[in-house]
Image (cartoon, rainbow, N blue to C red; front, top):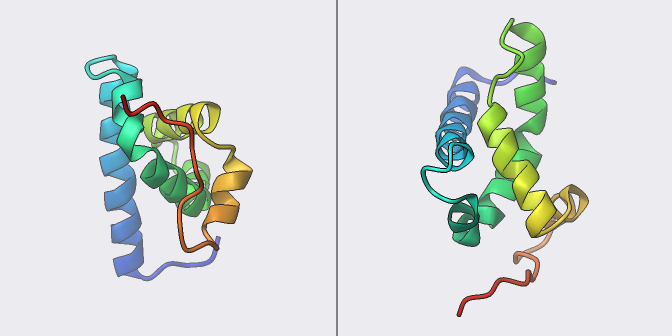
Length: 105
């Protein structure tokens, strides 16, 4: 991973931490994961695709092998339920989110 500026590193940490906390709430079933992902899955997918190299690099550099494990949990649930990681990666280059089959009723 290339070096990030201090500001970019801080921003990455902020986004990861926020999604990790959200993932923890879903993982512990304090809020059902289905409810979290119903409207949040496009953000989770996009953020994971962009930040996965950052997370993996931090895991390599620190003794914390579980760093952002709940953010990763949300991402994996998104990829199981809504779109593949490959589709999410392709989506980064599109102007709109991919269509997903979500029951809004």
